[in-house]
Length: 268
Image 1 (tube, rainbow, N blue to C red):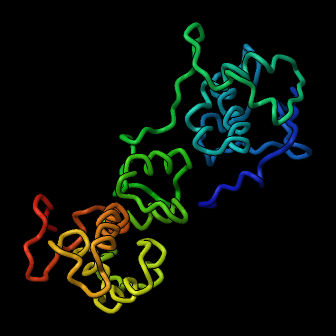
Image 2: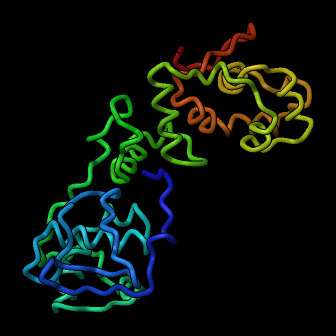
Image 3: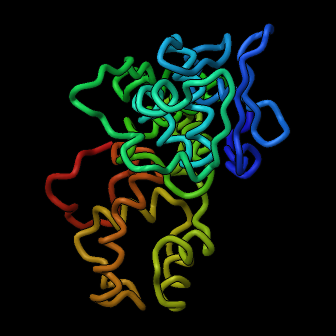
């Protein structure tokens, strides 16, 4: 399964449904609509619509319609609302055609007090654990739940599933970011410093552990050449960047520069 979902490969301008002897078929343009089981498998058996439709099949159709138009998180969060408000109430005939823009009508993803909705069975953050997750086999609903659970320590840039895999390796002890070499490109991309300051850090620190420990825990940063008070403040403000890169503050070594470390910081 791809770890990158591209809406453009699934999106269509028009959708068409028809009940046949062989079952309920839905077309996205000229192609059969993908069930999007890799997003969240509610009804692997297929789709249905209308007021008498089975909730699971209506929900699976809701996911398949929402994901290309609004993205995976909307599909995972709101499919049960959309299934009732649109799939079961608006698609009432044996055949139907809707335009992509019809899916944006007001209220289709709103919960109304006078209506009953099926349960949203997508996993919540408390249902998943990075240490036991099968990263390669995740559905997108599970991936989203993991990302939300570890939001404060998960690296944000790049591929989310790749970042979850990195976090898992860190927590399992298979990867130690402290041993990674300091990269001028990493400093330039993530710390927003002057050329002189970037050069000074790259020359002073050989590993990411040394750099992060100094930035987070050294009492004074401005005693290093080309690191003035303004630059020191900017470095301190990048604390969250380092915590996410290391997968948690507990994986950052404490500063060892014969200075008193900042109070209140946990040791490794």
